[in-house]
Image (cartoon, rainbow, N blue to C red; front, side):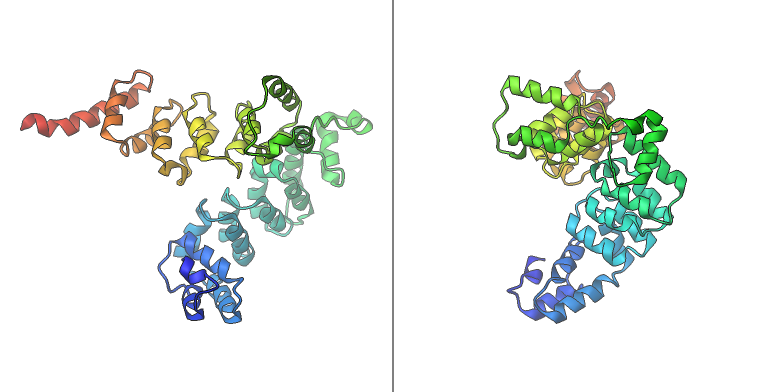
Length: 351
């Protein structure tokens, strides 16, 4: 793909990709067409736009659903094919789609798509402009908007410019809520200013006293602000927030664009990890390519049996033998490992 999108490659080579004449996986095809839409040659740009708008469903649908498709590509194609409700739904349901792209369509999309946008609680709290845009959408029902705003207010969202949010405060907290200022608690922005190292992934671990103070400050934050901190903070912030009892906060951590493979492995190995967080990990094809992550998920008793058995078949024989003797893993996994070993050893015994 790189050869066909490289600006220094001859125009005919780039045109081949713009015409979708090279063999690429669906997500790579969309990425190539996206990059060629910025090509210096007008002919390449025009051809890539024409091709992108006429891609067959067998290429477009898998790529729009694929979480490994790059966020800018998904945002581009939401603009391009968003008028098709089925494709708009695929992109909006894709966790890799940027929140900004979802907010952009939230004010003009159909009632069905607006409902899908509203149901993604993590997005709604992570990017509050989605609420603002939904409230401007004339296709949405009052009941849906009231439900979104009530949830947002309970989670700590404060939007002084949105009347529906003010109405929700009245419903949720009563008439007295309008006569006193909102108790916002610390915001993610304030915490980031107080602890400058939280913006630096290479910062050394905090001293114990400072970490304790940070923990106390974080406890006073609203769910919304914790989610924002989980998204923009460094490893120190994520290690604190992944233990939060609220599943949306913990999921925001694992979905942070800054999370590292090492952190994913530690979370997958932790028996206290929430089910919703594990679901994100074993549903991510890139992470589960790593052997250590597969092994950690098999050993974690919270991983669903069907998922564990699928990964068990991908483990080395030495690891399977070890699991067959490991009393710390679920008994169903231990028994499945024993059966795998017995099946492999059967021909040897017969001979």
